[in-house]
Amino acid sequence: MRIDSLPHLDEHATVIAAETVEVWPHLADIVEKSFSRPGMAGYARLVGAADPGTSGPRPLAEGSTFPGFRVVTAIPGQELALRGSHRFSTYALIFRLDAVGAGRSRLRAETRAAFPGLAGGLYRQLLLTSGGHVIGVRRMLAAVRRRSE
Image (tube, rainbow, N blue to C red; front, side, top):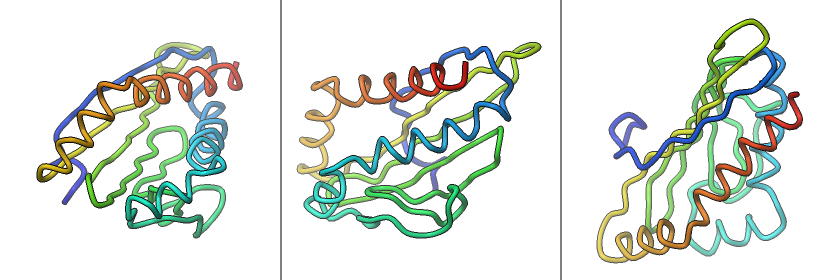
């Protein structure tokens, strides 16, 4: 399933007092570290993630993996698109950087996902009602902003 065919779940954004090229390395580092924390590889194996571990080129580039995700697009200063799948969902997390003025950037994080079947529907409910997804994405955006500024 292509990323653009996945249903849109949400989008979060923050404005950063730095140029997009200055934000990019912090974005790549924080995203990878966020999904490579202790326990993430175990969780990825538990749910049957297609990419349960870390592999591929570093810094992040097309084909790099970390628990639960594969990098499908890595355009420095512009876009970092991640895709993943497991027993309960096929999903994507797309980070986009836009210049919004001299020395300022907007970082957006868009989530797309499909949750097939009864088990997928239950997983969706758990993911969205727990608030964990929103908290995690907002924390990543805030961390990128802090480190970039």
